Amino acid sequence: MQLETMHCDVKGPVAHVTLNRPDVLNAMNVQWAHDFLAIAEDLERNSQVKIVIIRGGGRAFSSGIDLKVLSRREFSMDWFRVYERSLRAMETMDKVVVSAIHGYCIGGGLQVALASDIRIVAEGTKFGLTAVKECLVPGMGTYRLARFIGPGRAKRIILSGEFIDAQEANAMGLIDYLVPQADFDKRVAEITQVYLNAASEGQRQAKRLVNLAFDLDWDEFLEKYIEAQAAALASEQHEEAMAAFREKREQRF
Image 1: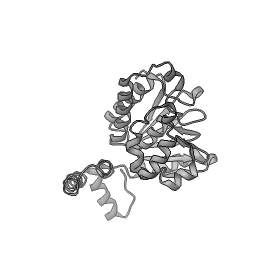
Image 2: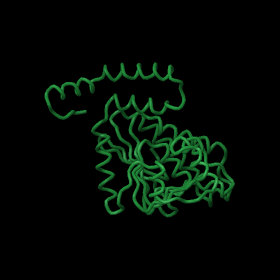
Image 3: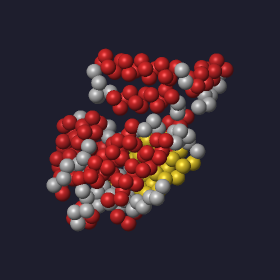
Image 4: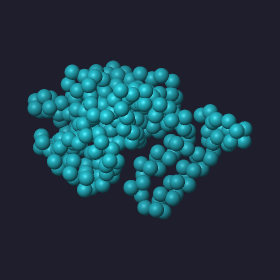
C-alpha cells in the first residue's frame, strides 16, 4: 500500500496502525480517509491478523479534521462518504480493534475511537467533538456517541463542542481502560494480550452480534445468535477449548 498519512506494520497476529501527521497532531487531510480505508480493507482480507491497534504518532492520537485544509475548501462531500466508509470498515471487520489514545482525541479522532472495539486511554487525554464550532456536523459520531453514553450526555458534548478530560470520559463510559501516562505502552501491550488470548470464532461472532444489538428486534436477533452459535460450535477453536478443558491446560488459539 502507498500510504501518505499513516503507516501499518503487521507483526504476526497484531497489526499496528500509526497515524502519522505529528506536526499537526495527526489532523486529517484529504488523503487521510483514503489511507484509512485502504488499511481497513487490506486488514480485513488478512486472516492472520487478530488484533488491530490504532495509535497516534507524536503528542496526540488525533485532533480531527485539518482546519487549514478545511478553510481552503478542499474537502468535498465525497470525502465525508469515504471517511465514514473507512470507519465502518474498521468497525465491522472480524478483528478486535483497539484505539490506544493519548494527548488529544478530538473530532474525527474521537470518531475513530468510537468505531473501535476497545479504547485504552492515557491519563491527561482531552476529548471533544468540536465540529459545531466550525458550523459542521460531527459525522456519524452523532450516531455512535449517543449509543455509548446516552443521548443526554451526547448532546452536551456535541452541541457545546467543549472538551472533557479523561476522568470525566471514563465516568461517562466513553473509554474502557484509563491508565497512567508513564505506563501507557506497557498497559497497551498487556491489555491487548488479553484480547489476543481470546481470539477465536466465538469472539468474532460475538463482535458481529454486539454490532447488531441496537438494530434488530428480539426475534431477528435470536436467529442471528443461533447462526453465530452454530458457527462457533463447529469451529476448530471450540474443539481446542474443549480439549484444553479436558486436559486441564491453557487454550491455544
